Amino acid sequence: MLSWVVTFLVVALIAGILGFGGIAGASIEIAKAIFFIAIILFLVSAVVGLARGRGRV
Image (tube, rainbow, N blue to C red):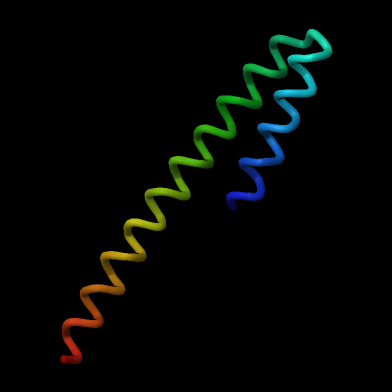
């Protein structure tokens, strides 16, 4: 999932350098959305992992 973020950031940088502002802006917004989704999924996974780990002890 984070590789998608990097891909969209690279697309945004290339589009920005070439002067395609609309495409660059859209790519940045998509990268931000995917990044925050990845962070939320990581936090949920960490909480579930901690809850399962404490239940076994």
